[in-house]
Image 1: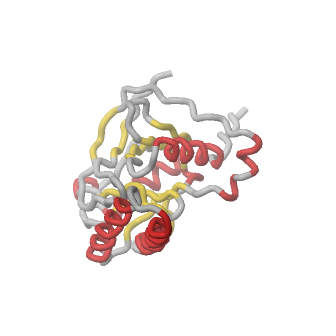
Image 2: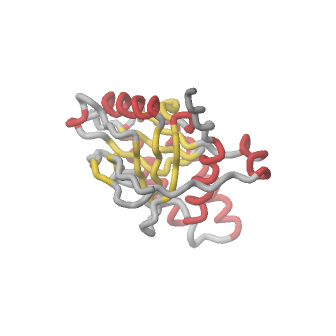
Image 3: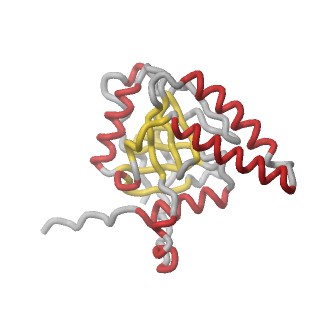
Length: 215
């Protein structure tokens, strides 16, 4: 069944680890049908505890300068990783992992997690766009946290484990009500297509069961 809910699109995306700061979110409507998320297998369910979590986290106040310099370094390391070989590649990968931990430190604890998600899917437009539909309670949280940082320059970061895959600041026009609509789309262009699919499958396995209909 095709649905066209209002979407909050993170229009500034991470590409090869480059973080985007101070960008304006856009409200739009999706014309593509909601794709059914794949059902987890029994084997994959046993590995759930080892899977990374998809989390929305708020940037800490006063970290803008350090975040900017760190993002530049992260971009350089990710670019080098594409052509390095042998021990140099291993050393660079270690530096990337350390810098991911540093980038993570610029953000607070998760304000939205898989427990706030109702459904997740990859858009069928050939891009790496991932869409999350929130539960009613999760949608309220999204509105609250975006209202909190609207116009401040602070970003709402989206993490998969320790890796920051997308982030965007929220325009001041949302200071009153925050972002509404209970659906958020973001680009995971720093991930490979296989990683994007793995992310969606893992989050699907972690989703809480739908509430039972009331009698």
